Image (cartoon, rainbow, N blue to C red):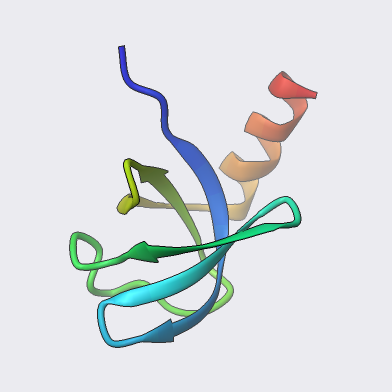
Amino acid sequence: MCLAFPGKVISIKGQQAIVDFDGVKKEINISLVPDIKENEFVIVHAGFAVEKMSKKSKNEIDKLVG
């Protein structure tokens, strides 16, 4: 089983980005989602952004995990 977490991209430098996971900021690799922009949301697994997601989807996940 794999766990992935949604976060908001705060800044981008090359193929690295700072992503905010509800107040916890981590540097992650965005090479798998090259079209991502600041203020968009991504799903992150093992230090890599693996998928772009909508704000609506992020909010729905937040409701489920409380």
